[in-house]
Length: 134
Image (cartoon, rainbow, N blue to C red; front, side):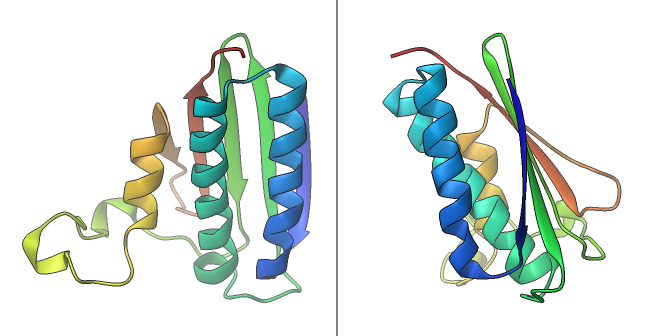
């Protein structure tokens, strides 16, 4: 099963992504535990793409690709921004960063997904979730 959606870079379009995840996980019979990880991780990635990647410019789009193969759901979120270097994001669990309001998204995504990869440009992330039924 493969599906691609494209949204304008506006926060209210997170609903479109949430609806797509609801439909896909329901149709595939994905467990509630997996659903929660997929939903939160994907919405965080899309939110980052809208706000940080595309700077909330509605002329720019965010593309979300869903690819369900066997027991793996791969979700790739790509924006039209200039990218970033994930390795340069400070660890939000370090004492000096505990009270920081930003910088938790990539950490959260890496904890929810079974695997996470960024492209060389840093404007696309692929999260892999190992799924289980019902």
